[in-house]
Amino acid sequence: MITHIESRYIIAVARIFVMPLLIVVILNLLNTPKDIVSVALCANAMPLGLNTVIIPSAYGKDPKLGGSLALVSQLMCIITIPLLFGIFLQ
Image 1 (cartoon, one colour):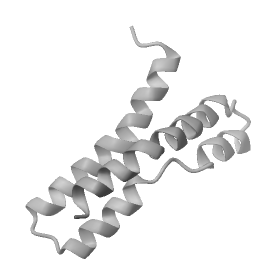
Image 2 (tube, rainbow, N blue to C red; image 1 turned 120 degrees about the vertical axis):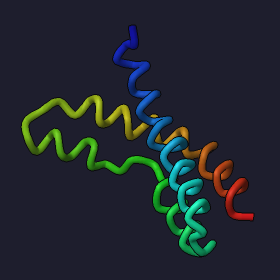
Image 3 (cartoon, one colour; image 1 turned 90 degrees about the horizontal axis):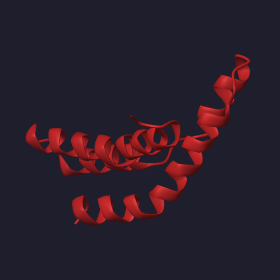
């Protein structure tokens, strides 16, 4: 069974690495111009913003999960952004 902590990493990996990868592959299959693919990669490879903390707080919910997701995604982006840009923006 996946624990609460492991789910944070799975969500962060999916958002930071898998989604940009899928978007770039799909756009390349559709013969999208390279500039548009680059912009889409830049927009989707960035870490989670602080909305993951602010929105639950605004509705009276606990923002701890959102805060931990934001932290994990920020740390992961140190590796994933250069990796994705190095692979796809040659």
